[in-house]
Length: 201
Image (cartoon, rainbow, N blue to C red):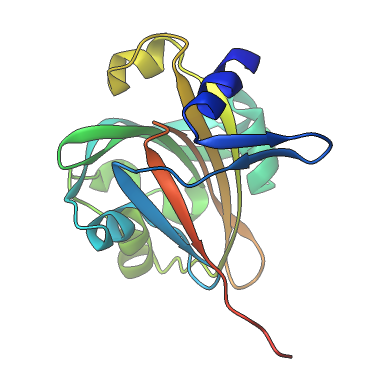
């Protein structure tokens, strides 16, 4: 982990400040995700906004018990024996792999995804809203540094130990019920641009 952080700092992607922690810095991106304070991040729409073509390689869609993925079960606030829909995809921009993404959703809300499946150009958020009535209104997202394991290396085309950004996001319904937990292991070339709005209230 320390080596990955050092490499990210040398490349100007993160900055470590004594007593304040590590911060993601601006970098020349292969693709940029615009984080709007009033909008849930969506890989497909943000990649298009950046002038690139989004697509995915769907590695699997399966049903798993929450006990098999404790962090997902915790974030989604479900019982250990609850069924989750697990989707693993390689996310691409202009056919170049940018991230390896694992998504978990409560099966009692979106179990139909298992038979429906996902195509290479399908936008999951759009499908969830239009076909399952799942409308996400809020999200909590954290970004930290990690390094590539063998699975990452195979699908992202990098060496084991290469620095990656680890993005974890939990999305919520209007009832404040958690509905989606995403773990995104991204190439550091994928930069973030954050838009903040002034609130005069």
